[in-house]
Length: 405
Ligand SMILES: Cc1cc2nc3c(=O)[nH]c(=O)nc-3n(C[C@H](O)[C@H](O)[C@H](O)COP(=O)(O)OP(=O)(O)OC[C@H]3O[C@@H](n4cnc5c(N)ncnc54)[C@H](O)[C@@H]3O)c2cc1C
Image (cartoon, rainbow, N blue to C red; front, side, top):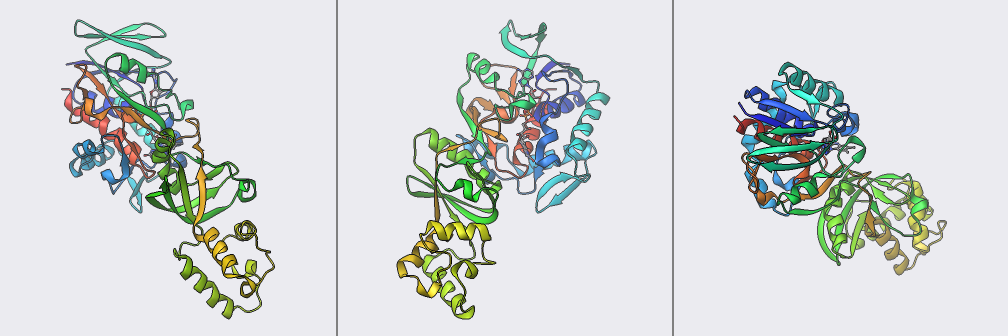
């Protein structure tokens, strides 16, 4: 029997503890909060989207993305789903997104905690780990209270994202001191900032869009979904899914812009103008504002007309070719220069972290320090919205648990 100490009682740490205890290890969790799984409660808007049917590396970012093929596999997908069966979670699957059938994140937290209790896992709360060192094959774990000694240590402290739930990122430096390479952490799944002068006017609008990411004018990636227009820039799942890449490009001083299509049934300027000609012939005597009614949000339509330097009472037939092109461009190829991303306080996850090439992805053991295991969001892998981040955290927890016997 090994004495295993897990640092951090979040999704990955709890999951590791359960599987380790089932494999007859003596497990202790050291958690700085007065409870485990604080972050789980805020996931999926309080409903916890814990997994996704489409568990493939296409939904992940990492500096070593190809290595993820060793862990994001069909076999491992079954292991995660079996784990949830084993703690009594019945899934409610909506378009591939897994939620607990109760639709309550607390069901996941409570079911995990019940299992921890039944397996007699020791949890020491209000204990902040300040450092770990290794002496004669034993780890010395220094905390704000006292020192602990352990044969094996699992680091599950999360990233810097959403620090109010306990994850503040002090383990990047500790693991660096132990010899690990850290890929620069940056906020991910986070809102985008812009500094154009009309943001106050579009604040509060929610609208269906297609967004294309351009870096130094080169097309990179496209996303579709609902965007929320804000007074600092733009938000929404489709926007946040681009944010991990965007934060990295901005950090490398690249010019980043997104092109937004506010009427994504049409994606070509000439086709849009033809469509408006036909609409104008059919709906006679309407102003441009009236003609756009029902196509795009009313407040947004008027702003886009204004930004095109066109009077909202003008008729389509009275516009010059140039006016039509400008308006069409503002509607279906609206360019927004991105100046930044919101901070860790607002970000759901974090890109960068511990270099995956230094981890044995079958066991999650460090290749640098024997008997040290690193799991969850602190690793250099971040996923899109949709259960991919929790899916990865739970999987890495299961991997550790199944491999320390
Ligand atoms: C608002 C929000 C919504 C989200 N929604 C979803 C979703 O629906 N689906 C999805 O897949 N993902 C979602 N995520 C992301 C997901 O929650 C995280 O990726 C995941 O919880 C990370 O798990 P973890 O175990 O690595 O770290 P965490 O859950 O952050 O746990 C780390 C634990 O370690 C403790 N700790 C940290 N440092 C120390 C230390 N030095 N000493 C002792 N203890 C320490 C912390 O207190 C914490 O309890 C969301 C995130 C946020 C913020």
